[in-house]
Length: 213
Ligand code: 5GP
Image (cartoon, rainbow, N blue to C red; front, side):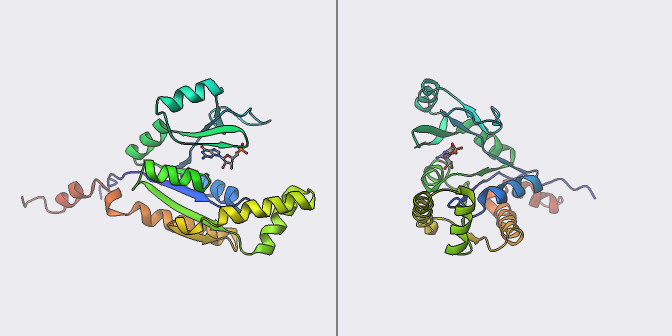
């Protein structure tokens, strides 16, 4: 049978969570297992860390370049985090949407709000919760190996990020990575099938009855 895929529009999948809930691992596994979704590469004014590559982890720009691009409207959203600027470049996102490819965003609740306003209808928001407070603290402690004070600060930052869970379309609790990944993949599969994301449907339905007008 001659099976041509029905043309679809891409979507913008946002995964937000406090650090320590497993978001980075889930993002990586999702990208590795699905060729139709790729990670959005942000622009930043901070210096590259060892091992970070231009265009792969970030686009590293000067503060002047950043301001010029922002004023020209080249960014979909932007934020200042710890004294540096971060932004999502607009052009690659719109190209992906038009070509029927999906883009994954690892941004916080503020970036999510701006992105939703800029590209309403294209954004699917997923919040990832940790399995318990004790497990979240254990993960932050393991990662930090820092003083009590630093761990307390991280817990308080996590609490403020989690307070925005109700602004998301879906909430996945990461009891176990395989189950959480499978739930995110189900969300993606269903959202890709939304009628409004399949602009090729009218043409396809016409081909079902070639004789009739
Ligand atoms: P880092 O400098 O450690 O890579 O990132 C610092 C923070 O900036 C993280 O919380 C990350 O989520 C946030 N961030 C990275 N890129 C963007 C972006 O394009 N937009 C927004 N709003 N935040 C970003």
